[in-house]
Each structure stands twice: as C-alpha cells, then as structure tokens.
Length: 289
Image (cartoon, rainbow, N blue to C red; front, side, top):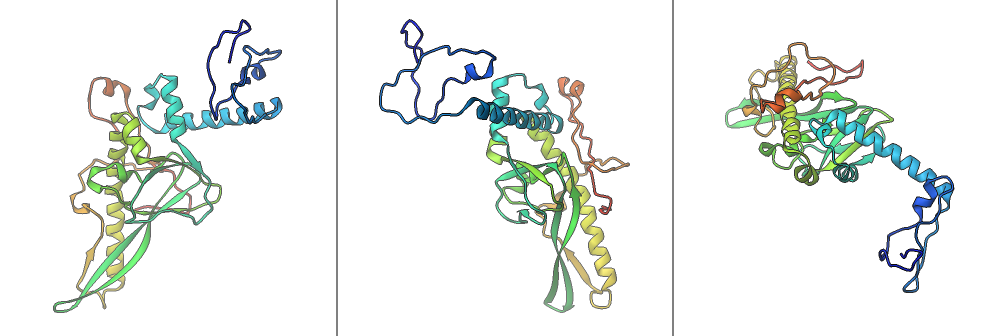
C-alpha cells in the first residue's frame, strides 16, 4: 500500500483487505494505491454486497454488546472500544431446535450459556434408595425438571465455581422453538472478564442452587409419600456435588419470575459486598416450588 507520492504505508498479507473506506462514504475516493509485490489471488466484493454484510454485522454486534451490558454485572463499566471488540468475538451464538440437549449432567463442560430469547429447562437425576433387606439397597433413579429459564438467564455457570470443578450440574434442554443462545468458552471468561463479574455470576449460581435443592427435596418427599408401601424406609440420595455444603444464602422472600443479577455501583465503589437480585422468567405453564 503506497501513497500518491510513492511512499510505502504498509504491506498486506493473506486474509487482509483494502478499499473498504471508499465504499462507506458517499462519493468516497481511494486514499491509497495498491501494488502487488508477488502474484496474488484476490476476492472482489461489490459495494452493495459489502454494505449489506457490514450493516447486518453491526446490528448483531450491537445486539450482543447490549445483552452483555444488561445481563452481566460490571461490564458496563468498560469504556475501551478495543476491549469491547475482543469481548464481541468471544461470544458465539446458536439457534437450537426445541428438544436439543445443550449440556448433559455430569459431562465435562466447556461453555457457559446465556439465553437471549426463548426458554431452556434444567433437569436433575434423582436417586431414591429403598432399604428393603439388611445389607441390600434397592434404588430408583429418575430425571425431573427443576426449573425453566428465559431471556437473560445464565446456564452452566457452575463451571466457574471452583467447588464444582469442570462438570455440568444439570442437563440443559431447549424448551421452546425460536430459542437463541449466546455461549462463551469458560477459559475466555476466566481470562478476560473482570473478577467482579465472575464473582457475581458464581454468587448467583450458588443462590439458585439453594432454591434447586429445595425443589429436589420436595420431589423426593412426594415420591416417598406416594410410594410409602414400597419405600417405608426410603432414604434419599441426591447425587449433587457438595450439595450438603450449600451455603445459607438469603433468598428474597418474594421470589418472582427471573433470576437476574443487579449490581449496585455505589456499593461496588465502596468495596462492599455484591448485591444480587435473583428472579427468573418462567412460562405460564411452568412452576417452581
């Protein structure tokens, strides 16, 4: 790339492009000349095609960044455009069909998911142990839906909690058509996100976990009651890592529809403890006890 006076400005390599600035301005002119140093194969993109692609790309970019700012605490304090560009390319999107299993309980996990639209179900495998004979335990296993999460919800975030290592705690299944998910690699979050954001996400998971524990407990009680003749000595064994060590988080007395993290800037600036407002949107036909 050289100027009109023949001064070399830069050297372009495979995968790089030129000439786009002249396409984005009405009556735009070329600002530099291009001279091939070697034989080259060039891909030509016409102006109308280029503008159409760029417009769609910009809309997607703005949608992703707006979603992140609204649903991940402390990211809205980032002012560097370069940092935002890096974050944008970290976020991938998918439009899975209804019934698609996104993550399997007990499987090694890599991605944390955010529901952009639609709904996803969380399911948990429960084991009921029936002590019929001495030194012999008969068990019953079944999977139950624990909760349904909608737009703004984070799923699979247990991967960020050191106590849960690297496996998914629940099976995540797409519950409705038209569901769109954003997903981010765990390693990228750990290396690129502010520590405060990671801490808030984990704190949110721990509070949700306490609610799920109560749901599972009720399911076991109902199962034991309905099968009392055959399970008079039933003992519930819930295969949840560290479930017995769940912390006593305070859950809002009026728990309504959407688990969402609110961060209070004034408290953050005074280095006080994070405040998490937990609600989650549920479909009319879904309920959680």
